[in-house]
Length: 323
Image (cartoon, rainbow, N blue to C red; front, side, top):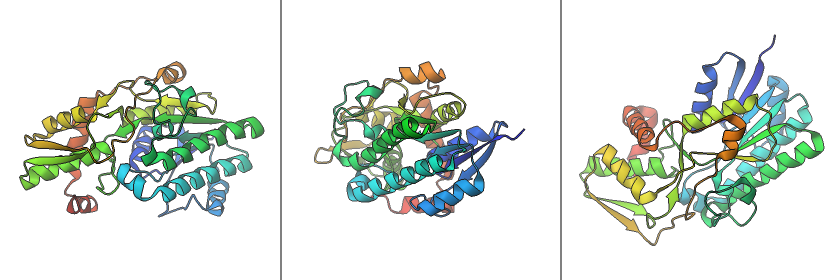
């Protein structure tokens, strides 16, 4: 009997590494990992059509994304909107034309939620306001794809799962200082201060904004569970259900890394969304999912991975341009 062929876009990315690792541990799937533009351009409809018709997937897990922290979101809003919208639209439209797909699994973003969403964020609040301005184009692109999945289910019967994870962290994260998210960016800053003997680190914003953080392997677990679970295309939050202020996160990382110097918060820099914390009851109801990695332990694993790979040639260029 033929195993279900699972095609994973963005397989060489941060989340892609964890998903491939999780699925490889199981023998019930025929795994087809696909990387980004170095191999295929998902913004090109002809490329996407060829992928479906030649590889004949039963399931598509769409992880490929153009994303990053506040700084690069502010510098490249058009690219973030176009790339994410084009990739998703092409993959979903070809899934509809292809006709043999059992399920399309999309990983969205917490950036799609309105800036002042009541905490904890509930899935039904997704359209109740405009996203936080610094990453609105990215969030709106993913939110539009949410509606596309719903429309395609209603018109064409396309089966899909639509997951919205909170900020993720863990091994293989993006440590490029030009585009990294908050946890790798902080690890870079602290390590740089320790290496250079600096007695101060500079942090964007007030430190009072809160974030919820999900260990990447916990997210991979939900993605795997969604392959065979019947769902609707309506959003499903994926997270821990608990939040931490950025200033407390900084103190946690300085403790783990052994930094004892000062911390300066730059109030002229944006905080981003004031608070982020999800209602994760729907994920528990559908998948029986509860995040298993405590934040402090997950941060220790992440810092350990960072130091282990810091000296590798493919990784070392990240450390030569830290501001």
